[in-house]
Amino acid sequence: MTVAHPAPPVEAADLDAALDAVRDAGLRVTAPRRLLLESLWEASEPLTAERLNELSGAGGDVASVYRNLETFERAGLVRHFHLGHGPGLYARITLGPREYLVCDACGEHRAVEPSQLAGVRRLIRSEFGYEASFTHFPIAGLCPRCARRATS
Image (cartoon, rainbow, N blue to C red):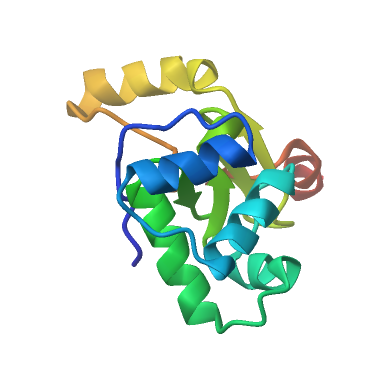
């Protein structure tokens, strides 16, 4: 299981700010890292490392992409999460805090604001004492369409 690397988020509104943040973290901005960051900042949705490797055009191996994504996560620029049984998805922090719902039947996923799940967190806290977070793993169940199919 991959583990999220909690780091204080770095608000890099654009690619230049992201490159500055990499340098500020004491890291080199190599050509593959720059191409990967360009792909992340152009993406409007979270992507797999494999897809980011394709989009970046760096032609590198996926293992290097994973290492760079982990480096970016530790620097506070990127976060990853999992939807169901598939590979991790990566998104830049500037897409904002999101938590996810995923359908076990069709795989549809929906990003929601963390505040929308505050009631669920309160219930888990009162029943079990846990402070729940759904940023790394989603809440799984059936979407409205699949739930209707299951009951009919």
